[in-house]
Length: 469
Image 1 (cartoon, rainbow, N blue to C red):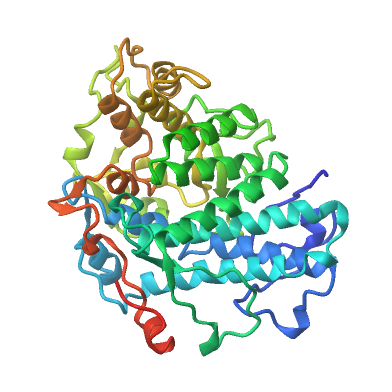
Image 2: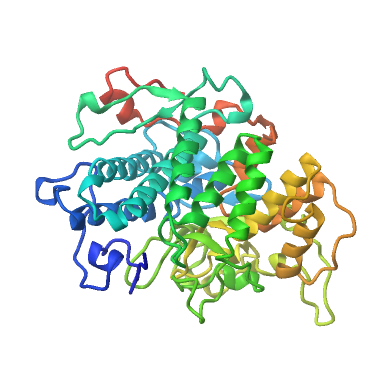
């Protein structure tokens, strides 16, 4: 089945755009499906599915708040929050209130997407038979990754053990047309949530196609997210194999410009003018549509953002190889991407992450580069060389994104350092700390100070069904 996306505008999508080449209609996805958008036709189900992806792309989920709060949970020695908003400051200080509006909105956005996906799954019988498997796969992909982000942020990490008794998050698997007291579910165990995520993403991978579109679930994206799930569980064999599948599907390529990996507005990896196709799953951002909260808080006023709320500190920059070329430029292009103040920010001397400099740039949720790093780590841990040796994979990524010489030997610490440098400030750091049983400024990886609190409004509305961290 060939799916043609004329424009990926997640808030303005219809089945005519997603499944053929027609006109666009405005869609307003909601947690409950209104009567006038009843799921009684192929067209309406596909509209609702588009709405689920729109929910993921909104400000308080993959539009940037998931990534922002994840980064603010990491070490205060490497980044500093200077913004005036108290909600992110609570996360940065590891002293969060259950009434924090950013955290509440993140929770609600995630479950909105899950609920819409469940409604789509409940109406598959009306979908055209030729499209049914892809619709099911895309809905399962949404449900799986939304549960995954929620359980990683609101529950104790898998690595802390006791996964059958530690509370995860509510596991929502049925459609709700109207939200009321009976809609609230207790927190399933961490193990139950992870097993459901694996089931959803495994089925999604088997049903999805690879068509060059990276704003919606496809086979490569499902494999990549599965790899991330298994890695969090320390299931290195499955994480390796899923990463290897994502690589060998040969749909994407690691770009040779690290800067352009994060500053491209292209939305189709088959577009010959696309700056990079490294982003396996991305949230498109354009002048017409899309949220980019990472730009809002990480960039500066010279580029239309706030006044540089997040500062990158020298302790982080010192982790990179400082070698220079003959022109005085850093050989490690990842280090070269950081910049000091410009425009109104001149004179502060503060360092900023160039990954989020510009507004109309896609937000990569998972990149192909991560898959090489995951495969390398897992192969090294297991003493295998599935797809390639660990050394070859690390040198491949270094060769694409640095001008540094190849490494001749490798160990686990070096692999983990390369992962940290490559994926810095993309929202993955805290999850690596948790799976590796590290600490954050002296706080243990499984301390509740590193968990987002269940929103108080949800605790109150559930009449005791939901329990707080």
